[in-house]
View 1 (spheres, rainbow, N blue to C red):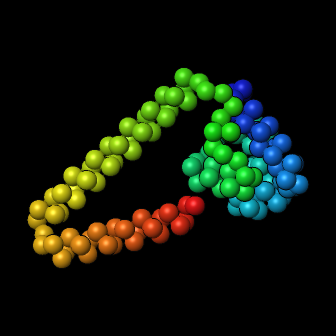
View 2: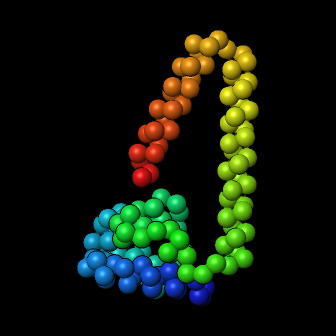
View 3: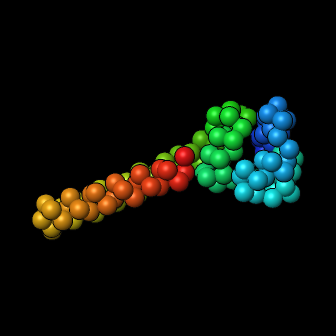
Length: 128
């Protein structure tokens, strides 16, 4: 069992108890089962995604760095890989926008940018 995952579970459990949340209450807030919360707190799962991490931090008033029990080379490598993927996606998006700008009139490009901004705002509201 990964020591970091066990420590993470302990942090979550301690904060949940501090806020007088039951496992049922936290499960409902996160839209997860009580079994999942128990497994999370006992270090029996590492099934995290960014949405869950964000909801967990908001619900328990935690910061993401406070959930990282120790800085490890594995964490560093995962973060680097994630950033590479993000940077690649951003570069691809900007390249595509330049192509669209070159091939369409300004009004069509403005329409596209307005639509893109609307979608980004919607996405941000969903995952806050």
